Amino acid sequence: MPAILTNDRFRMEIAVAGYEFPEEGTDIYDANWLLLRVRLKVVYGAWTWQVEDAGALTWELEDAVGWLRALAAGEQVEQEWCGFSEPDIRFETIRNNDGDPVGLTVQLMDEFQPPTKVLVPRENNIVTLRFHTPPDVLSSLANQLEKNLAKFPQRGERPAISHAQHP
Image (cartoon, rainbow, N blue to C red; front, side):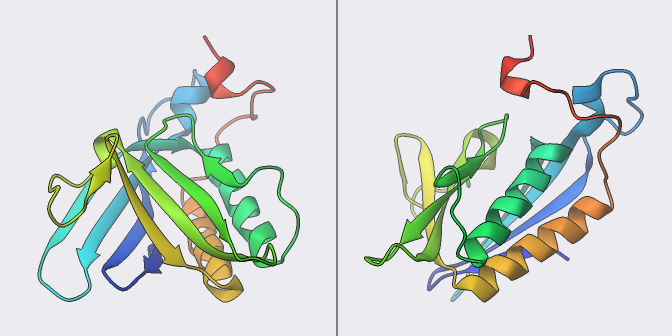
């Protein structure tokens, strides 16, 4: 089952579709690239769009689950955003005046952008969607992503350096 976010215009589903390279076993990065499936549907209408592409490494998605759980628990997070080596999906915290997390901004870039600019406006080639995410929604999002990740666990040991630093 996908992780789901809903606002007054859209329902967004995020799921792990599989490994990008299912048979890879020699390169730690290639062995751990995940295909992410994003489905966007208008709440009041028939328009639906879906894409599936490489989007994150297994350990990056695991880190995202931890980040979402920390937000849900009201804990301090090191940074107010969570992204991946493939910079196509990014989550940013929306906080109220008291500093409590109340929402997420989801940015979709490159391959994860819907093709229509009428229904889903973009600025600087980035689609930005805002979702109200009280703690129970953040927890549910984290739980569903974790369940998806459990089907495609990390293969091998996590490198000491990030993919962005990897040649």
